[in-house]
Each structure stands twice: as C-alpha cells, then as structure tokens.
Image 1 (cartoon, rainbow, N blue to C red):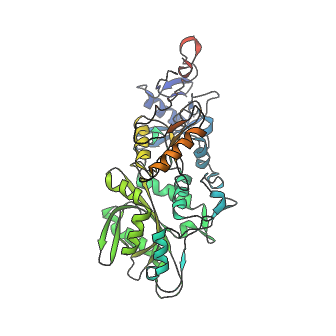
Image 2 (cartoon, rainbow, N blue to C red):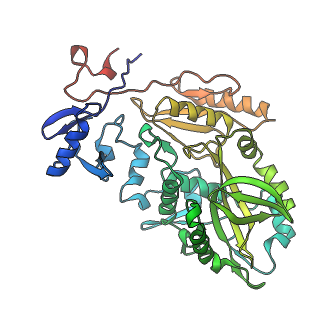
Image 3 (tube, one colour):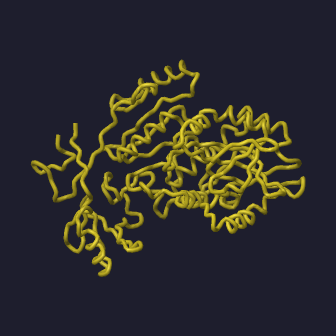
Length: 432
C-alpha cells in the first residue's frame, strides 16, 4: 500500500521556495504583488506560472487561465481533465459526455443545439386543461427516447457548468450566486428552437430583503413575454430553481422557491399524483433529510396575474455543496468523500442504471460504481449487481449491496514538490 502524506503546496516566489503554511507567506505574496513578480507552483517541472489576486486586504494565489493541465493531477490548482477543458475559453466547444447525448444534440460552432422532447410552445387553452397532457405526465411519456428530456437537460447543464466535480479548495465558496452564474454561462452555450436557452431560462437571483422590490420588478420584466394574454399561441418559460416547500393551494398545489418566495408556482392535483409516481425516490430523499436541496427544472406558462403554472418538470436532489445525489447511497458516499477532502467527479444520472463517481486524486482516475436501483426491485438489483461485478476488472470498485458498508476506497496520492524528497530520493507517493 502507498504511504500518502498531506503536504502543503510549495511555490517559488522571487527566487525563493516557500510553503503555503509559512508564517511569512502572506507578506511574501504582498511584496511580490507590489513588484509585479509572477510566482510559480512547484507541483511539477517545469513549474507552471501563477498570478496574485488582491481581495480586500488579502493576497491570493491563482492559476493562470487555461493552465489547469499544467499542474500535477493531485495539485490543489488542478481540475479533473474533462472539467478543466470546460473551464478554459473553449468551454462552449466541449459538450459534456452525457449518456445518449449525441442523439439529441448537434454542435454548431461554439454552440450546442439541443432537440427537446418537451414542448416549449402551446396552442389553444391552458395546458392544465388538456387531459392528454395530464395523462402523459402521470405515465411519464412526454419525452421521446431520441430527444432530450428535462432530466437530461438538468444533468447536461450541471455537468457543463462544472458543478458535478469537487475539490477541497471549493469548501465555503459555492454560494447560490456562484452556482447561478455558472449555470447561466453554461445555458448561454445551448440553443433550443433556434434561440439561446438563456432567452427563456429563469433562475432566481440571490434573495436580499432590502432589494426584494427590485428583484421582483426585474423578474416581471423577464416573464412579461411569456404571459398568456389570449387563447392563441404562447411560449413556455424554463424555470430552474431550488424548491423549499410543496404546499397545498386553493386550486391544487404550490412550489415555494428558495430565493423567490414571492413568485407563485402552481400545479394541479392530478399533476401532483404524477409527480409522486415519477419522482418518488427524489422526493423521499428530500423529505427525509434536512441537508438535501431539491432542484427543479420545469417548463411553465405565465398567467395574467404573473403566476407560473407548471407544464412539465424534472427534480434533482443535490447536497449542501450542489453535488448531484439522486439516491441515499450516492448521497452518503459523496458526503464521506467531501469530509475526507477527496477530489472527485460524479457522472450524470439520467439514462443510467447505476451511479458512478470518479476519483481524480489517485495515481489513475478510479471509477466508483454504486448499484442502487429503486426499492421494490430487489431481484433486479441482485441481478444488476452480479452483472456489474462480473464485467468489472478485478481492480474495479463496486458497491454492490448498498444495505451494507461500502468497500475500502482507493487511497489518495499526495506528491511532494521537486526538491522535497523522501527516503532514497523517492517522493512520498512512491514510498512503499
């Protein structure tokens, strides 16, 4: 087994090697900032350049744009390979690897065109008066298999926005404002029905009581083009928000959205029955834990009073740092990885019979497979586990029975910078 050591990162500042835990580190950065000196990270040779950013009275080291791949894989300034590409200027030309994505997407230069399996335009009376729409909602047959459903779209947005990976440096830095800006940037690279997705996507702004009136006014301006003024043709708006509560209303039920509590979002009782059928595992996880957030991606019409009426939706549970966690097993494993300061990436859940997490702080990226099918399908679950274990190489990590503790996780590897070698000239990750 490899002996791993958690060592502070080391940098070369003005010709001197210094660690981030050095008492004079802040003063060295301040002096270099005033002189215009560019530090270097000693995670590998040749040492990649860094730059110093000033925030309030502090000076912080940042990697150069597009230089993530120049750092060692276990360096705190590196990102997973797939996500590092999405952080560069070519973010829009690198679509995420979603299952069946090639079927319902097409690349046009820097933009990705998506062929939706849900409607974005309506004709005639309101959709909730259509029996066919309610039946489709109950049976879950709104989206053809060769088109993008709302569950596929929210997975695609999350993956494209880089919210599906985690490194310890993100701790305390993922606020709703950051998540919203990343999602809007990802949506700006997507087109549907010959229009950018951002033209019809509404994501609530961070709630501030002092600015509540201005936020409501800007929301009303954005939604004005989607009001159903008459019984003719009208477009549907796409809502992406965090659900705080689901409560009864005068005619059906209402979603109370976090960051937009004064924005009414309604749906009828028959729609609620279909909602419970389609998203029973997600709703049960949300209701059973206080540390689970429930994200909603929905299409809705806006009535004359400014309220939204749901046409179709998809729900996705995430944890406190916005990592997707569709099942209790996946939630528990991601929470454990975060507490252990591991670097990992979760794979999209749509069109998949098994969950997967990819560790990126090992010698080689390690795939963690979780066989977690819905309750009531124990026989199918055992069959799936047997198939996965049989097809997996002997070194693969599979959590086949989620009712028992998971197997031992692959250890993290922390490399020492050049010049700080262990016994016999070996780095810490090479010591046996």
